[in-house]
Length: 168
Image (cartoon, rainbow, N blue to C red; front, top):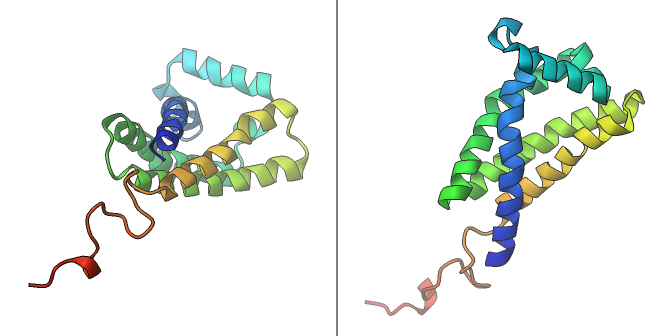
């Protein structure tokens, strides 16, 4: 089980690194005044919209703006916490991964419904957004895994159970 957790954590760490940069640098441009961002980042966002055909970023419908606020205020801080928890082997990683995963999956389900239902999304755009559904599931599964690899079938501790302890 320990090797599986390390594999999960490695994959999540790389994903969290990407997600640590995108919301404050790209997504926040739809939420905050443009004067806060350097021209290079504004140009990068516009190039992304042009190349991918991301009509959600171009048109900024209200539901998408709400999801961007969710991403910036909840998911992004959780991403930073998860990066720290993985690198420092913190025992609360499963909790933050579970919250992050459920939040990401819920947001991406709404976006996926829009992309597939509107039939305006290109293949490139679907390939940009839909993997985040999988990341949400992946992070949720990591959050549901046991805290340590020493868990037994009977209980979570390595010591004797309460029933087998000697009475005083």
